[in-house]
Structure formats: structure tokens, C-alpha cells
Image 1 (spheres, rainbow, N blue to C red):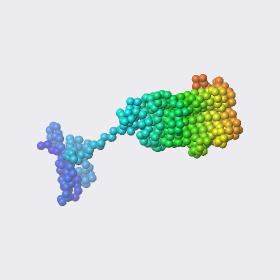
Image 2 (tube, one colour; image 1 turned 45 degrees about the vertical axis):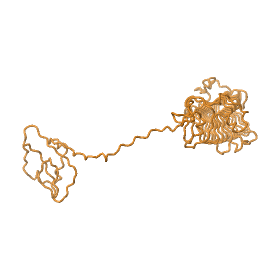
Image 3 (cartoon, rainbow, N blue to C red; image 1 turned 45 degrees about the horizontal axis):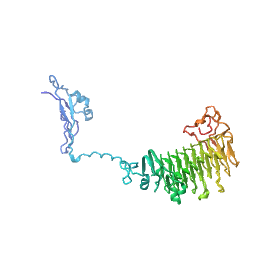
Image 4 (spheres, one colour; image 1 turned 180 degrees about the horizontal axis):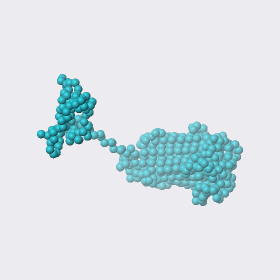
Length: 489
């Protein structure tokens, strides 16, 4: 018969000390010790090809005694088993019934579209979902809740006014998808004199926000309004961005008593009577409006006006304003008209070719008549002003303690300080009478600087502890090593 290899069992009191076949590998327990019902590995003897050979008999000696301590006989390794042509068969896994199986995790819930939709082919009797949009923006405004996004699909719509506000964390957003036009009914501009009451007056605005906080108006084309293209009154945290407002009768964008309003990246043009953008009225100590990245042009009066309007009530002074990166050009009157504005920053603006028929300056800091709230404590820095028919910067009616540096001004009267109580740096402000050799192509609106022009490297990083902007008007970092350039670029 074929002899199977054997191993010595562990030598321990109470265990047998006789050799046992390796195919067993189960120690014989002491008498009386219960056996543990743990599955054991099964050893399968694999026949050795060829002629069977009897095992080598090694005579007992102190060096190979079968009574060596157990530590002298380690358990066989996998390599040992392989040399003996022995394969290990793992014990079978315990069977698992269907009732004990762990269920698979549930699939994630489907994404729910929480937006509401308006479309020209919609119906206000619908539920406002993607497949069943509403017909009018006004209906959406009446049902909107904090956090809602009203997606308005391409088409032409009648004016609307908001009915409720959002919160700082959950604003109500009106988002134009594609070419969305908001115009008066029938495409005709109603006359302002038709309004006999304040509500009737407000209805002449194409988009009117009144006593509604945290509203966002994004991406609309607002045309031919009877009064204002977009109007915001007595509201906080409203954001107007990426809108194109044209041909309004009185104002392109008007805000009144609007705290923390943001007017961002809009275009306002063709206002028939007054300003492209007008931020007015103040009753809060900190108004904090942001007017950034807009283009305002071809309006009948100023491109952008800020006015505390003391005669309308409140404290009468706009404070904490940031007016930056705007392009203001070809307006009939002033570029930037700053009336009763204090403790604000005006920087990186490009202002040119205004004052077509009238005007005081590209940037005019003054006071409302008989209000006694002059524009004071403002920082006017790194603006480019090219005004061939009027003053570049003018300070009148008590405008004092304004800090003015790093500006590039081309004008027959670059800086006119009628108060003589302002901090105007005579070196970092580049004051010129001609723009020849200064800009790349001002006739085409390209006011980037020639590399060797007079405005290169002459600016200051700060003046009277007020810092200059480290980015220029197109978002590129300014040169900090060789010196700031003057102007918006």
C-alpha cells in the first residue's frame, strides 16, 4: 500500500504522544474536555506517481527524539505541504437561508427638478413644472417661494412685479433662458402722465420690486418701459445682473431705499429723459450698494448717478458704495454723478466721451442742493477718464476729505477742486490734455495703455493708507514690482 507522510503530534500533558496520520491533523483532546464544533480543514492525500517507497526510518536519538517539546515542531507551512504533495481543501461555508440574506441598498432617489418654468406656450392653469410651464411671469411671481428659481424660456412677456421676497440663504431667482424680452403690453410705451396713483406709476415699470427682499433678476432684455426698465424700492439684498435695459422713458435701472442692492454686469442705454442707472434715497446708515461691471451709454442724462436724496426722507447720504469696473460713455451729461455719497470706493472705471450737450465732469462729487450732505471721505483710484469737453474729476459744494490717486485723466481741465480740502496726489494722477500716444485705439474704445506711455509704472500701492486695487478693470493683476500703472488698465 501507499505510505502516507506522518507528522508528530504536539507533546503536551493529556494529549497522545504517538504519531498520527497527517490526514487527520486533529489533536486528541484530554479526557473530559468538550470538543469545539469548529469546521476543520480536510487533508486529501494525493498519490505519488511511480513506485511507492517506504518511509525512511530514522532511529531514535536525542537529536530526533519523538519526545521533543512542542516548540521544536512548528506547524507545517504551505511549502512543506507542497513538498509532500498534499492539497488543502477549505471547510465548506455554512449555508445561508434566504431569510438571513442582507438586502441590497436601495437605489438613490431620482433627482427632483425644483425649478418652476414659464414659456410662451404655457398655461397659468398648469403646475409650472418643466413639462407644464406657466404662461406669464406675473403668475410665477405670485406663487414663488424662498429658494425658487423661475426659469423663463425664450419669448416676449408682459411686465411683472414681485409679490413676496426670499431670504439671504434662499433668494427668489427669475432666470432668463435664452432671448427673453420683457416689454409693455402690445409693444407700446405707455405715457407716464397716464398714472394718477403710485401703484399706477409703478405699473409703468417693466420689472418692479417693492417691499420684497432677496430677489434676483438675471439675464432679461427689458425694453421700452413707460417709466423704469427695472425698479427696486424699499427692499434689501436685491441682485440685478446680466440684464440689457434699453429705451426706458425715465430711468433704465432705478433703486430707492434699497439696502445692499447689487447691480452687476448690466447694459443700460437709450433712456429718454434721465439716467442709465440711478441709485437713490437712503434711510440706513450703511447702504452698501455695489455697482460693478456695467456698461451705461447713450442716455439722456448721466450714465450712473448715486444720490442720497435728503429731501425724500432718511439720512440722505449713500454710504459704503463700491463702484468699479464700469464702462460709461457717450451720455448727454455726466459720466459718474455722485451726490451726497460718503465713505465709498470708486475704482477701475472707464469713463469717456460724455457731456455731449451738458455736464460737469466725468466724475462729479457734490451735494444735493440745500441738503448739507456733501460727498466726502471717498476713495477715487485707478480710473481712466477721457473727456474732451468737460472736467475729468470735479469736486464741488463741500466735497471734502476725498482721496484721489492713480487716475489717468485726459481733459482740458483734468481735476477741478473747488473745495480745496481733498487729498489729491500730483504724481500718481496722470493729468493730460491729449490722449495721443497714451491708449492703443481710443476711437474704437480700446483704452489699454501703450507699453511706454506716460501712465506706466507711476502709480502708488496705497495713499493715505487707502490701498489701490491689485487687479485692473479686466481682472488682470497689476504689476507690483515695477509699479502700478495709472488708470483702469
